[in-house]
Length: 136
Ligand SMILES: Cc1cc2nc3c(=O)[nH]c(=O)nc-3n(C[C@H](O)[C@H](O)[C@H](O)COP(=O)(O)O)c2cc1C
Image (cartoon, rainbow, N blue to C red; front, side, top):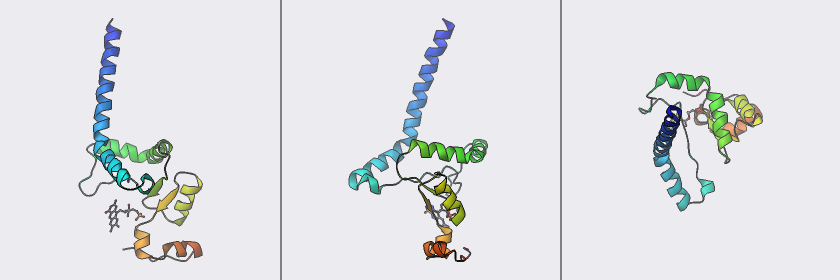
């Protein structure tokens, strides 16, 4: 009997967690839904930045964040597996890293920011293996 009570309680907690998780996503999902209704869904993307710590976005549990960072490739692959749209990665990639990420199927596309700011002709430079201006 004690075990049954425990299992009932486990289900109760699981249901509460599911509602909590749903609510944590609600803001982002409502935006995705509203934008998809307005323009074609294949023109809508969502950016997730789990490790961002600027603009007061720091994690409330830095220990857990450190653990996640150590597991970041596994996390990335889990998200990739769960999402069947075009998957774009970003952050600290150079040309070789980008080629590797796509070749190893970690991503469909790689986005570049700082290198692009310093090199508006970045795709051409990649193509020619030309040296890059350092970004500031
Ligand atoms: C000047 C500057 C402004 C940025 N502004 C934004 C922003 O408004 N929103 C955002 O999601 N990321 C922003 N980022 C982050 C970039 O999109 C990108 O994630 C980051 O630079 C890492 O990619 P990279 O190594 O290719 O530069 C900004 C980065 C820089 C350097």
